Length: 437
Ligand code: UGA
Image (tube, rainbow, N blue to C red):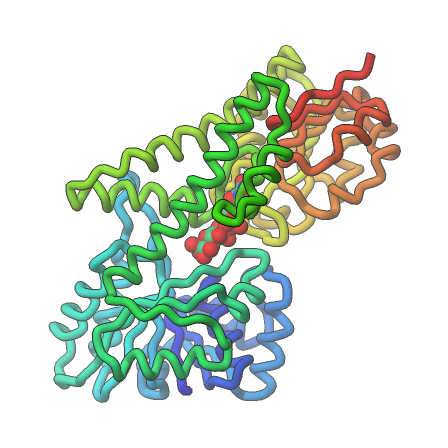
């Protein structure tokens, strides 16, 4: 199939690369000419494991192209995917101006039948507006179908998620469009769910909000574990072994972050309000999530007494491992708060340093060249992201390099028994603290 992807951000680029890799001809379009030049020169604007190799392979095979022209994309393709940002507005509403603009731009150059597929996360009923807009601005009276095809990939394992999806959701009104979409996804051999456009759009917000709810649920239980001496990891194992519940997304921690869950939960609350159906359960999900970070900060304050002038190392800046993304990262919020309270904070992250250096909120932090360098002379270590590198660190060297071996593990990454045996003061989430006698 000949496919255009409008928007070469995270979703657009990964989708385009994987579509090319299964044999489609793909043009990735973006209005950021610098980004297109970077991609044409063989460099990637984001870090995602495995992506660079796939991009290079398919550019060499002439199946993957980059362009700043929507006209070129629309002319050369049967199917046009829209994968532009849908950022939140301060009131929680979704900013759909990029979607609207791209719809007009497609309308402007549309002369023959095309399938226009929305891949961006959008509020229910957006597809209807896209169809109206294209119809209104298209001077050629060209026929087209609008499809909703939400994306469920996770950063850090995006290639795997795209190549082996649990399901492909196709929201469409015309059988012809459904048939074409099934051809696009045929090589992936995934279960396909065909729905109306509104249902497909709703599935995306409902799925992300449910996952966020699952995290808040276990985080609420972690607070009960802290108060009762139970172990949240064991509780998660115990409930997760019930296949109706499942163990995934039951890892307690400092709360969810990133560019999806916080935004999508807020958007879904707003969508409910606009439809006259308040989704109050999700407000509680947000409250628990924010409270989790506060509980962790309280643990740090209660232990260290005052943060002013304390040397604190922070491992992890990205919102989760295997990505360089620091957007809406709880780790960054923690560093920001500790800096405001007068601590001297030294940070280290395997991939997120470059993007973190651009953030004003943590401009006063010191950036170390390695995990162990970050803890040199530190009075406490905070683990904010569960990178493998931290799980495999030499714990004896860690203890030797710290002034006082106090560890606050916000991701339950390390083993409390091992930490206790080595003589650390070890605090984690929903598990008993280890204080050597
Ligand atoms: C999420 C969804 O998982 C994807 O299915 C979806 O496609 C994507 O949003 C999106 O809408 O584009 P992502 O934000 O990349 O993916 O990352 P997740 O792996 O879902 O993690 C989100 C946050 O939840 C992270 O901060 C992570 O640390 C936290 N988390 C996750 C927990 O605190 N506990 C868990 O058990 C799992």
